[in-house]
Image 1 (spheres, rainbow, N blue to C red):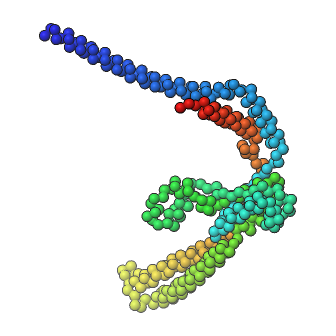
Image 2 (cartoon, rainbow, N blue to C red):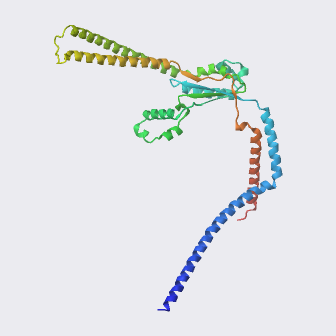
Image 3 (cartoon, rainbow, N blue to C red):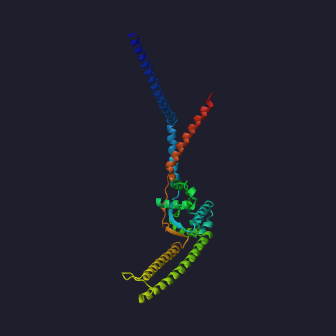
Length: 351
């Protein structure tokens, strides 16, 4: 019994040593794994920086020359001015507006200044100063997007509407989804924008929009006549009940009087008169809304914000050639060095 006890202890000690040795090797493998990753990343950066250090003087000289060239080009560039105009089209005239803006840009690219001169009624010299037109959706808040989303859901099948989220709707909207549009013009001349506004105002009218406005006016006219006819009938009935009340006031024949002296017939007559008065007010309110709709949308567009008399100077990061040219030169040098090393590796590679 005493001989087996030390033997068991020795076995347990051996098992513990084996276990510790296993854990130790596992920890070493993990440490070596991370060491190799860190060493690989460090070697990659050293290998990447090595050509830059070797060719440091060349890189500095090239970037300095590129900066000088960029500065010279930037100084020789003509100033660019811009101005914005906010409009709200009606009767789907926004489609014609977007089409015409694209057409104007095509005329500028083709240098067809004669057509532009006719459209905007300005001199040919001024048309040559126009650089481009741009159009995109005007400013809108979250409530505007929600209203558009609700209108979109109403316009499609209910089964499909369940599969389209608000986020998907906002991300997949086109330029035609909005109700307000911002027209932006770029020009070398800073005081040309006001003279372009009259020509742009003609871009909203087309045959479709004219027909849609005429159709709307016809429907309003028909509905207005129906409401006026209903008001006339209600007024006639009101007059009848007023006459009845006058007769009842002079004579209580055919009426039944309660303890408090009120007549059933009088009570019914007054109730009918109140209902007719209420209906008359509702009809007149509907008539007012129809007239208001025609007054509010009696044009093809509303100008929410006009062009400024003098445009503001346009600045863009891509116009800072003093910064862009050196950065481009550095990227090109890196690509050349990388390509050179890849070609050398391929030439010297042996399977």
